[in-house]
Length: 272
Image (tube, rainbow, N blue to C red; front, top):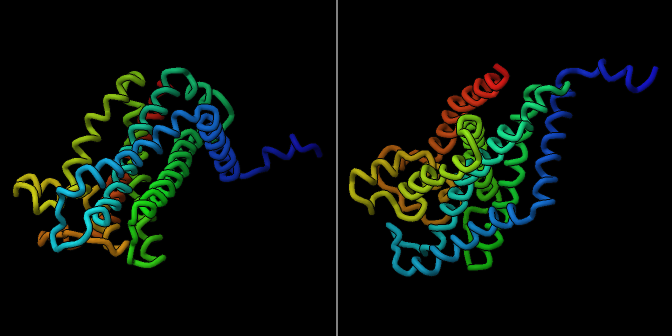
């Protein structure tokens, strides 16, 4: 029996994984052929670290004491993960408006491969971004005191946030009409990251703004990662800040439960 005749005997799970990997390989090949894109994605966080750590760092204080750069770095990790959904949305809308997704849907491939492949590609890129940022942080003197297991748990929590925001990006990418409109999502990401505990502890803000910042899902991930890294936390007395590790797990789960079905439903409607 020929190899072609044996192909239909493969399970649906096998083809779902194989098709997903082909989409991942396509996405990584695009980055290889367009290094400017990945240079920008990796360069912006590094410039942000240098800007906020050295230009503004001398004017910042940490509640409870501690070095501001130690306080800042987990926040910068989380900010990079949060901004990633803009890139996800831009790539998805580019594929949708240029007929790439329609071409995928016309091929004998697993329907889930387009969405899952995008997610795996973004997670691999997120791992690269975190590695580059960690090396940058170590170069400027950042030293986590939580041990290897604490650092690995913190990075897992950051990737968990990125995983949840991938589906936000996929849904928005299928919703906006063109790549230019996707670029405007920066207006959403900017206040989302600024009104959080990334740069300043919520208790240093006005009370109403501090409450909003404390309940920002990004703030929970930031505070939890600071705790796991063993760096200054600067947590307040509110319930949400005292249970940052718990909420750092729950918030991304809630976001995934909301936006993953929305993304799948929107993807299914493309053929109608």
